Amino acid sequence: MRLHSQLGHNDQAYTIMVRSSLDIQSRVDYGYGVRSKIGDVLKQCNVGNNVLLLCQDSLPKEWLLVVHQSLEMQGYKVRLHILPDGESAKDLAILADCWQLMQSEEFTRNDSIVAIGGGAVTDLAGFCASTYLRGINLFLIPTTLLAQVDASIGGKTGINLKAGKNLAGSFYFPRSVIVDPEFLTTLPPRDLKSGMGEIVKYAFIEETITESTDYKRGPRPLHSSLAENFANGISAENPALGPLISCCIRMKLAVVIKDPYEKNLRRSLNLGHTLGHAIEKVSKYAVSHGESVSIGTVFAFKLANKIGIVSDEQVAQVETLNRILGLPSEVPDELDRDELIKVVAYDKKRQGNTIKFVLPEKKLGKVSLDFSITANELAKFLKP
Image (cartoon, rainbow, N blue to C red; front, side):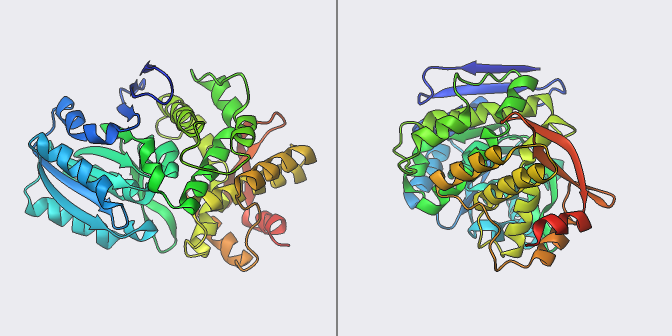
């Protein structure tokens, strides 16, 4: 198990190569302007000539043009396919369209999918790449904060079914993830804020990751740094944002190389997600992923508080951090609690009649992976 990094300052370009004990390899290319190097990255990986370029509909055209030109300048034959925005991209019909496009263009196993967009696009692209010809090359260019710090990193792919989010999926590791923080300068404010919901999750699992992996946290806890550096609002121009993205990438990679298939430690990354995914589904995705995770994280603290694991002060700390970052902490009143419980019961993490929850422990930043609760018990905690 190795984590190699070639670093200058956190806002300068670098490449991280990771290899797990199971010989799983992946690469992250990080830096301002690195989007223009996508053609070079494919050349270094010695892939085939055909590229299916998947892009979300609302992506600013200037970002797409840079990526498209970089690929063509290196001689790649690019087939562009525009996907709908948001979770509607993660659909069986969309997946089938992508398969058919590659078949019509006679893609081989050495050819590639390059996906540029948010987490929904990278999720769909990953599942498509993992299943076409039983696996072709995958390169991801995440353009949202949430995708850059979490969704595109670590090899999880998925599409949605009627019963819930990401119920069909696979573990499939991209050849490279190209993370360019400059994409965030055109991100809508709500999307930028939503990404912070996933970063808050990292803040409250930081101690567990530090103790269990090669990741070393800084002199101050991440939750304290977040509260201080973003007290005046969230902006893509904030000089703290680049190092923050870099920190989250390292945390995610440290966990993934230790537990690539979510047998144990990687489950810590699900803090806030069990209820969060249900909130997304029941709200018909009107509540974004990051917003839902922020609510789910607070709920996990409140649940831990009610069973005597964490203090009232710790609950107040996570609520305060959400308030500073402009994130919600409560399940919206209009969402049907019975429907939420029903959706949680279909969660991937259920075991028999019980649902697995990641809960915080007494030391802020540490989590327990082994708490189980039945749907009836969950209803008592969730209903007003």
